[in-house]
Length: 380
Ligand SMILES: *Cc1c(COP(=O)(O)O)cnc(C)c1O
Image 1 (cartoon, rainbow, N blue to C red):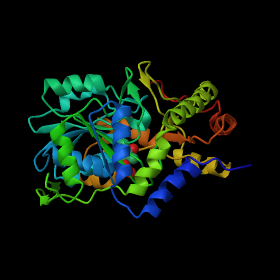
Image 2: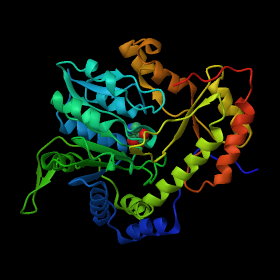
Image 3: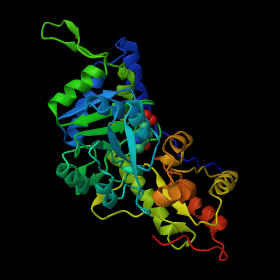
Image 4: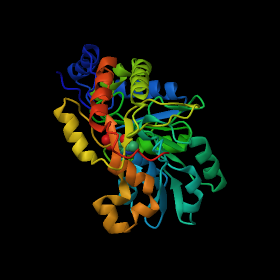
């Protein structure tokens, strides 16, 4: 029986040819394809500016630097996400203020945000986890009330919507990743979005050593910038996949429907909730297994049976660095984030996967966990 991996990027011959064409041209870094990718992304998302950079973590870092966030400042971040979301806050010398997530969407629990705001809060950085928009309109309302910028970490949510509006188009800044774990990929790559002309200028200057090119074509070094440029062959690679994005999202929604239908009767697995006003892009299909199960043994057993699974994301304040620095009692403060980290199980999801693959995943999973003796996964 063939092995069904957790994920597998779908790079077509056309994608490869697009990248190779750039390699043959000799124009390797930040050329016409970067410009074309930025134009395409801005048009698709309905934002004024898109700025391509070297990876998703770089986008978040640039956002914080451009907003002037640093030592002594606080940034509100969800307790459950990929660690990069919090790492960038640490890198600029600011403090993470963690907020627990919802048990069934894995997105930040909006009702807990206002209590986390202090006079030192400088930004709210919500995550659209696993390809599902968080309650971004509500977050924008809170942010406006407190005059705070919102940085949307939409790294895994390109194409996700709330009330038909795209993630990454609500906040002061939107941030995307093109890592192979995301729907479309350049290997490494990232993209910032904003409607603010001044911020867009800063992103462009800061990604390229702080260089501003004047009308006379002369370079002027106006900031201590970074080298966060994207190569042009990476831009060509991801731009070629952009044409398939809607199809990829549709395929993933079909696979998710197969999972939801076939796993629904299984009381030892809790399934993700999708609010009706949102389009999920299913970067990850994330379930929670009942407390009785040792999730890591389950991953090993599934692997033996030909199915690749993994945990989905981290309870960040529970990771060594954050645990030692912040010393927060995660079980009390972030019970949903901790449970999602310890009992979360991400199932295979990639656009070359077939419905019968998804059914096989469900059957195997139910064979392993479908024991009457075990207590039910707690109700959401
Ligand atoms: C993938 C991801 C990142 C980091 O993106 P990279 O391109 O790997 O640097 C940040 N935040 C979230 C939520 C992610 O899923």
